[in-house]
Length: 359
Image (cartoon, rainbow, N blue to C red):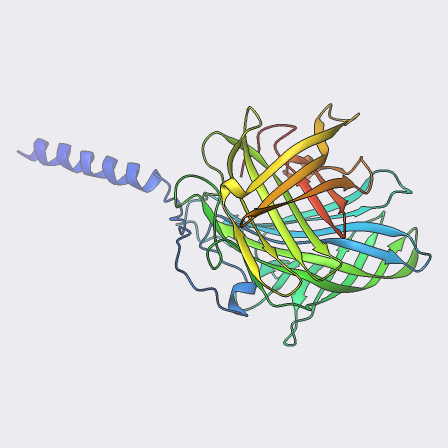
């Protein structure tokens, strides 16, 4: 009997030890319809979701009459680290950021990036409002709604302020934006188009004043891409008449749309949400990257059905070589560039052309 008790005790200890060695993975929050976005809270971080981003793109006009594009993006990712690990060094939340300057005179992107685990006052994202810090890079929103950022490195630096001129544009169904055939394949998503930009760009130690317009995208999700999806084409444009357009398609390995959508807000402020059948991207011209060998459809026809009518725009890049290689910071290779359409300026993003995108 004693031997049996010892045997049972050993089995119990082994079971407990095995259970203790089994990591407790995070229980990611799920994006659901019917959730009302609340501000300023939803300008801040949502650490219970797998990933999110604060994405600002735009055009800057220099004092000598030239136009350049820029991107500043902060990302937060909740990793699959064992949730029982209470060490301050455990990388449960990772923050990383990209900044890029698109200058036709340079002929290619100037790019820099940062990455760090959250904590120690060096990398943090507030849940109360937009306030993200990653070492010396920052993105903050003040009580009046104006946002400021500092980002850059040895080749350039951006010190910019963004003043909203229009209300928040809720994407999808009141901020619930489907990205695939299953309801959970979605993001909470809003945009702030027509931001007025002012500030400085520093190049080669020289600081120059700039003005322009920009677009902020905010998304958070735990299941962004459906199985079989390799990437997306995304476009956001501020029109000269005050209108705004966001359109995207999620692609499969054959280049066909698995899902599509977007929003169009006209000059009077009337908002139309775009269903998958309302959006079509048609490549017109491709650019071949000499560095990665990737072909990107940098010039496209974008068709958007608005009720009984269909509007078409030809998307043309400010210049072709706007490929961004973020592999040194654990990110993907993608094309992110300033682009024009008739009557507007904005950005085109092309992911999953180099390799299938992993979220």
